Image (cartoon, rainbow, N blue to C red; front, side, top):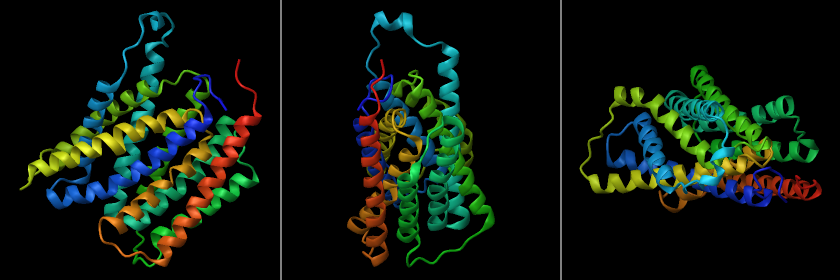
Length: 313
């Protein structure tokens, strides 16, 4: 099932993306606890998430064998990939936080995560030549329908044009990051570890001035708890999840990536019910089942397609 010059099997790439999507979903619950524990703002939290995640990624990187030094890709290529993915990541996160502040969590989530698969499917067709197919289109439609039911079902929403525009900007950043990762992965030049480190370095630099303006150091009456929460946010939904995301997105079709990552709101909804005391509603159940079915169907289709393709020389 290996479909990439990197040698990572597509099946393992799908597993990486599933774990990453579930891990991303825990970030919202952890952020809610951070806000309850301190006066930290969303941009500052995003900065510390990226900066501390960068430290963990650098510490966890295995040393490169010296014999591979001669075949390392040029510095300019690595810098370009780090810059593009870092800017995409910064736009994705910051515009999403701004959209939440402007038009509310429900609308911002639906527009950002709903527009992402559509933009990615169109971009992959135009730039990468990846065909979605009828089954894939049906899975994307089902996943988007499930997302709308899950997030908007029973919720009071206010739609503000500026907030929707910011959410679309966030989706564009996410789409660019995913398509570029897939492009470099198909060429065999994408090193997931190097991509993650470079992206977080660029994102941290871009977010630093915004975080300083918002207030970099929070006030809290429970600093130990805050540090544990920040450590979790940096380790699990950041360093681990994005490392797996960049590895999986390099070998799995872009549209499939975008649908699998919709596991994030499913994971967040489950945690909200189990840990934050929110009520389990019919909309939560229906949306979750619809999204899980779509993700499972698209993942099976991707795996079968990988088996039918010849392995690279």
